[in-house]
Length: 361
Image (cartoon, rainbow, N blue to C red; front, side, top):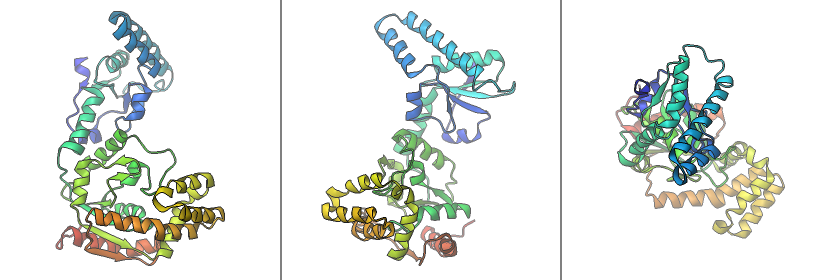
């Protein structure tokens, strides 16, 4: 077992692993809450088996619990060898982990090793990885040069992040990592990851950045949907310079109607989401919005939401967070052609925000 140990020194090491497959040997429930990036779940014990063995271990007999657990693990691994691992060649290199790099991953790895595969086990297991994430996002200041891409709802900031990334800028897409559009109607298919999984995705994205170069982040509150932006990043964002994108409300309404077409395609879900705004905006406004939705007037609905909900909320948030913008870029339209045309002006504003003398490499 000692020869199979792999120590995870930092999160950057996950980008350069000399392995073919990362196997999370924990139960499905543990995997769903959080897991290493790219890991597949091949549980040594199912959720029910883990509960059974744990109960016997605590309440009855530890030896009997280990024996039952070993039988479960052997049967489960046999199923994987005949199923998802059946086509792995002799030079396949798996990396296995469980909660703390103990019995579950050790038993799994021993079987793989006996077959002849060059298997490694993460020393300290998932807990070692999670400690690195927490240290980065909660305990240490981030050595970043963040720039905020600001602008009211519907100014295509997420699309602009993608276009900037294509042109070589470092970006962090918080909404993409959180699987949420960051607004009252921002739910995305598949729902949001757990807080721990969101933090793991974020930590990996941050670990891959060059600290000497600026990173562009969409200006958000400290929450994206129900996911909280961890304090190290949030404090860094609060102190960051920003570039504000502005566009006519008609262009923003057209953009929102297109970007939120998946929501408008499900009328019941749209009405439910609008109902959630009643405590904030009152029944009269929400009733009017729902009438527009029922009529299929989604561009008109988007325009009403912009003027009656999003813009007032954005103005309050800016005042509350003491946001000051010194660099602004106005665009007349928000289709891709217009955004691409505006990119040189946006990039120039970002460079001025980062450093008046900066030259992007």
